[in-house]
Length: 87
Image (cartoon, rainbow, N blue to C red; front, side, top):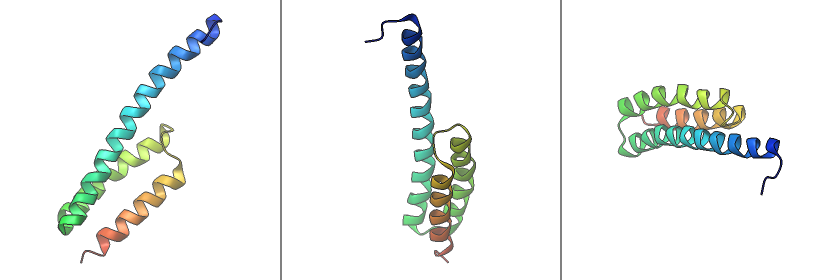
Protein backbone atom coordinates (compact mmCIF):
# COMPACT_ATOMS: atom_id res chain seq x y z
CA UNK A 1 0.00 0.00 0.00
CA UNK A 2 1.26 3.49 -0.87
CA UNK A 3 2.21 5.52 2.17
CA UNK A 4 3.93 8.73 1.10
CA UNK A 5 1.97 11.46 -0.71
CA UNK A 6 4.21 10.98 -3.74
CA UNK A 7 3.55 7.23 -3.92
CA UNK A 8 -0.20 7.81 -3.46
CA UNK A 9 -0.16 10.23 -6.38
CA UNK A 10 1.83 7.78 -8.52
CA UNK A 11 -0.70 5.05 -7.73
CA UNK A 12 -3.54 7.33 -8.88
CA UNK A 13 -1.66 8.23 -12.06
CA UNK A 14 -0.93 4.56 -12.77
CA UNK A 15 -4.62 3.66 -12.45
CA UNK A 16 -5.63 6.38 -14.91
CA UNK A 17 -2.87 5.47 -17.36
CA UNK A 18 -3.78 1.77 -17.12
CA UNK A 19 -7.43 2.55 -17.95
CA UNK A 20 -6.47 4.72 -20.94
CA UNK A 21 -3.96 2.19 -22.29
CA UNK A 22 -6.45 -0.66 -21.81
CA UNK A 23 -9.05 1.24 -23.86
CA UNK A 24 -6.49 1.98 -26.59
CA UNK A 25 -5.33 -1.64 -26.75
CA UNK A 26 -8.92 -2.85 -26.94
CA UNK A 27 -9.72 -0.39 -29.73
CA UNK A 28 -6.69 -1.52 -31.74
CA UNK A 29 -7.58 -5.19 -31.24
CA UNK A 30 -11.09 -4.48 -32.54
CA UNK A 31 -9.68 -2.98 -35.74
CA UNK A 32 -7.31 -5.95 -36.15
CA UNK A 33 -10.18 -8.40 -35.59
CA UNK A 34 -12.19 -6.69 -38.35
CA UNK A 35 -9.28 -7.28 -40.74
CA UNK A 36 -9.04 -10.92 -39.62
CA UNK A 37 -12.78 -11.44 -40.18
CA UNK A 38 -12.62 -9.87 -43.65
CA UNK A 39 -9.69 -12.14 -44.55
CA UNK A 40 -11.56 -15.18 -43.24
CA UNK A 41 -14.62 -14.30 -45.33
CA UNK A 42 -12.41 -14.05 -48.43
CA UNK A 43 -13.60 -10.54 -49.36
CA UNK A 44 -10.52 -8.72 -50.65
CA UNK A 45 -12.18 -5.27 -50.90
CA UNK A 46 -13.45 -5.44 -47.32
CA UNK A 47 -10.10 -6.72 -46.09
CA UNK A 48 -8.24 -3.92 -47.86
CA UNK A 49 -10.59 -1.30 -46.43
CA UNK A 50 -10.31 -2.77 -42.92
CA UNK A 51 -6.51 -2.84 -43.22
CA UNK A 52 -6.42 0.82 -44.28
CA UNK A 53 -8.58 1.69 -41.27
CA UNK A 54 -6.46 -0.40 -38.89
CA UNK A 55 -3.07 0.97 -39.93
CA UNK A 56 -3.39 4.48 -38.45
CA UNK A 57 -4.91 3.05 -35.26
CA UNK A 58 -1.97 0.69 -34.85
CA UNK A 59 0.56 3.45 -35.49
CA UNK A 60 -1.25 5.71 -33.05
CA UNK A 61 -0.79 2.96 -30.48
CA UNK A 62 2.93 3.12 -31.17
CA UNK A 63 3.14 6.89 -30.66
CA UNK A 64 1.11 6.62 -27.45
CA UNK A 65 3.40 3.90 -26.11
CA UNK A 66 0.89 1.04 -26.08
CA UNK A 67 2.79 -1.02 -28.66
CA UNK A 68 6.44 -1.20 -29.63
CA UNK A 69 7.25 0.07 -33.13
CA UNK A 70 8.54 -3.29 -34.36
CA UNK A 71 5.47 -5.11 -32.99
CA UNK A 72 3.15 -2.82 -34.93
CA UNK A 73 5.28 -3.13 -38.06
CA UNK A 74 5.25 -6.93 -37.78
CA UNK A 75 1.47 -7.03 -37.35
CA UNK A 76 0.92 -4.72 -40.33
CA UNK A 77 3.34 -6.69 -42.49
CA UNK A 78 1.71 -10.04 -41.74
CA UNK A 79 -1.81 -8.72 -42.23
CA UNK A 80 -0.98 -6.94 -45.49
CA UNK A 81 0.70 -10.05 -46.90
CA UNK A 82 -2.39 -12.11 -46.01
CA UNK A 83 -4.68 -9.53 -47.66
CA UNK A 84 -2.45 -9.52 -50.75
CA UNK A 85 -2.66 -13.32 -50.94
CA UNK A 86 -6.48 -13.18 -51.26
CA UNK A 87 -6.24 -12.38 -55.00
